[in-house]
Image (cartoon, rainbow, N blue to C red; front, top):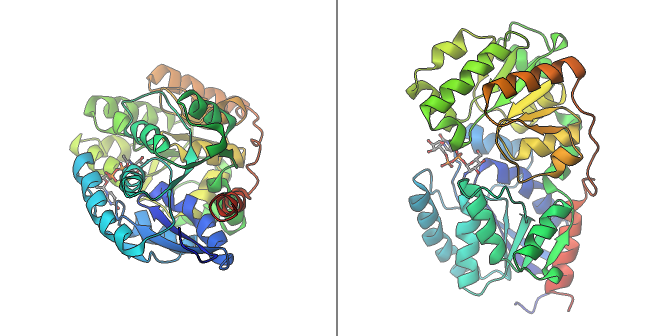
Length: 376
Ligand code: UD1
């Protein structure tokens, strides 16, 4: 570790859900220049304007100091390529710590390289478990947590999961949720739903009520039979409430390969490209219900107090169900239809905001990191 007062932190991002998590951390690190010297490295796992640049701009994330430009590929190709390119940068930059967020391939790839080089790893959003090893993210989470030195959790169950897996208590800290830091800091800047709907030529107004739909999990979109079943029930639901559907690039490809463009085109579904953070926030905040298989959206809807129907069999974020507005409905079409009808009729369950989801998680992380690495 260097003798200077500032802790040299190499912050890693790779894919869209990482960007909302790094934004408040970069801001805190850069505002405490005496304590931290933060470098931002983007692996390039996500690279499109809509998947990366727009979100960086809207959240005022500094341009990455380094872009590894790995792009897409199989899990092995992508992970291996990130590791090779990251190692070169790590040897050049010699940080005191490497900070990784979330559970994408970039998270585990960079954590693994760092730990093998003897550089401590800090994992933000540690301890989440779906207990479903078919999910690539679950493998990334379990492995990253096993090799991390400091582990920051968003909910109490994360702490329990880590203790059960043998992580020692003094390395785990419950700090709240950096993604909710971002949401609270940007809520007032959200683009009004009206504006986004008009931009994409919606034939309904937000006052009539609408639902937001996102879908990108391989388990839902990669198998054409499963995707067809899901698109069918969503098209049915759109006769009760119009759906706004920002389509992830993976899903875009799968929909056209499965020949489902017409089913969507003939339904009351407004299909858009992936949206910027402030557009999606504005749409979600005013939606009657959000239907999604995303991880982060389960938390964002809980923070917004908007009902979320999760199109998955499990969640790694159980507090969004026990305290928040989330219902795990799975992918059975009867169950989805019944759950959405119920939410539309009753307004969904009233949730509350989980402990420490207060907009100050990044501050707590910075405090703990500084005293852990520099204060002893
Ligand atoms: C990745 C993460 C997932 C996260 C999701 C959010 C892993 C294992 N998965 O999944 O946890 O929820 O990001 O979006 O890390 N593509 C583009 N432009 C881009 C990026 C991707 O067109 O900027 C296309 C490519 O065809 C690519 C496909 O999307 O093959 C999938 O991208 P990839 O990063 O492999 O996985 P995601 O499904 O995005």
